[in-house]
Length: 272
View 1 (cartoon, one colour):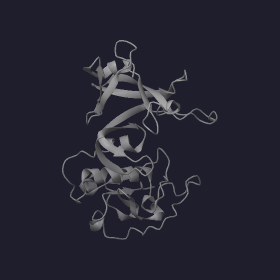
View 2 (tube, one colour; view 1 turned 60 degrees about the vertical axis):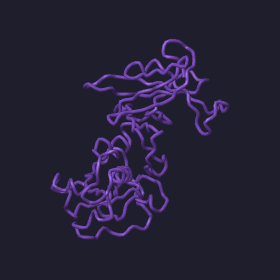
View 3 (cartoon, one colour; view 1 turned 60 degrees about the horizontal axis):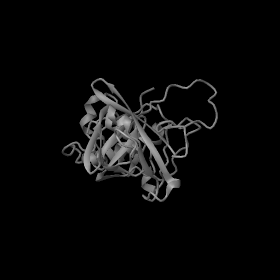
View 4 (tube, helix red, strand yellow; view 1 turned 120 degrees about the horizontal axis):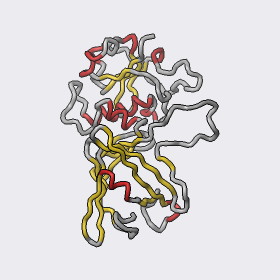
């Protein structure tokens, strides 16, 4: 990593984030500990390796820089990266299209959030506690969305359904992605960005008049995917670009009072 005040490399000792996603980088410079946060983060270049964590594997090395803006009393971050042999930096949360879009597209939210102390499996979205990890997530993705929905894994205590905060967070990741078949080993997402749904738990039943109506219930969820599915209420069921899940899931036929006995969350579609 390039130094804070010069170009000499330093050793990063810790990357940490507070629960409100404020980032801090600690490193040694001349055997003296240094701590950087806020807009000073922009003066750092972090180098990391993909795959085996070895500097000898230069083909896998990348450089990362953080862009900071101060909005409404807190820092917001955007991340850019490149290979050391490249001159152009790419935004972490922007996938360049294979070809120019046929029509103007809305601006992409390039902000990232940081999740301290939790590791998220990149394929299956399983959640595990790990104090040595800070997970970085694009604001448009499931991780940041579930934090916005107040399903933070560090929330104290259990819900009325008995689910811990980490279990509710894990269930939210699957529900947001419509990953109905995770329990069968299928990590596919059966939805599209921008699809409206209503997400609820036992505590939120009173928050929406439609949340407790079985006529709109799509699925019940735990950290391993959907526990049941009402196919007639599946989001995007009429979208030819979104296939129907082909795993065997029972219909959600249990009484409303039993919805959260074996699940942490529910998803419902909006009334037409």
